Length: 183
Image (cartoon, rainbow, N blue to C red; front, side, top):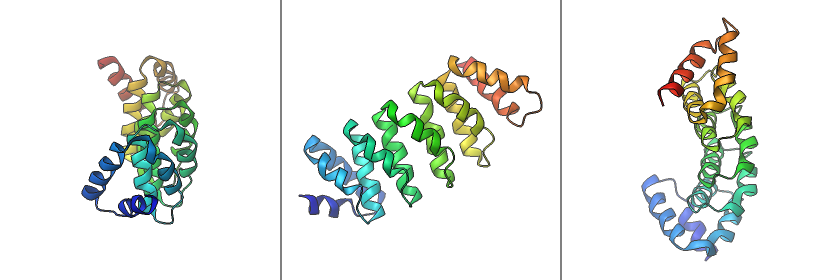
């Protein structure tokens, strides 16, 4: 079954992959060991698609391996690991996701900024405030959305940024505060 599973995962066609992942997910927990092994496969598509399947399955036992995958040389695999960790929702992922806000690829930073708000963890607030000055607009926008989801625990940090005056994060902090107030 492992070879069959790997063969199914070794593709980049997103539609075909979605069908394959859905099929794998319906097999249940019995495929988790094979998916964990697949996270170390030479093909980036196998690693990415295995991470996606584990996230869809909310496989808590995969969290340590997915955290390790965040150091993968391929940015698309790192992004997939971020999204899988977010789908699982285990708080052990918060610190690695915060670290991903400094990834060299904006897609990984965007994904990390987007998902950090769902954990409700105060450790993410200041790094998200710092991400308001990221060179990539989508990272900034996702950080604002995450801060909005964090709501009240982010307000004091955002007000502190506003009190700093001409800080370049001021406009984004004001936007985030407005979003929190509107929600």
